[in-house]
Figure 1: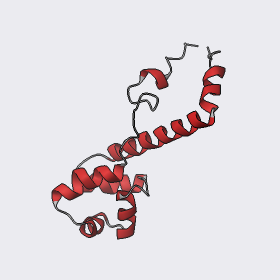
Figure 2: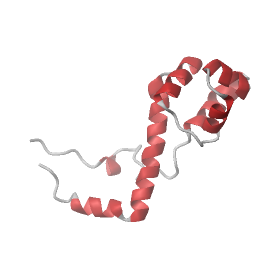
Figure 3: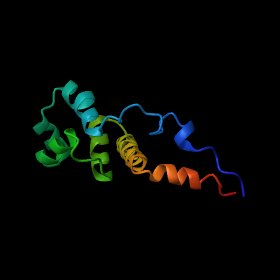
Figure 4: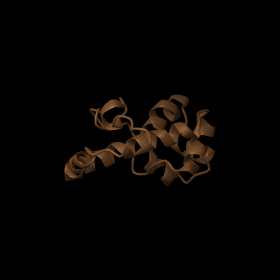
Length: 119
């Protein structure tokens, strides 16, 4: 078996360990980078996305995340890819999971246990 690559928590620039702040929520990106500059109201964007207004509102306020369904809808409306929206959501969730593991002490214990790497 080959050796495992270096820990992504210490070498990847997108690693939660190296981030100084949480990634921007995808809903904020949609709102500020796509919807508002295009002049669309929230109601009109919800209509075009074929989703309830309260769902879009919660998404833009960071209370709701991106699902594969919404990633497809957002990509079609904005001319981007569904992967963009899913990656934004994944980066946000990874950051918060890392912070939670770090605060609980579990991360430190797992890193200690990982000293004996799988070969």
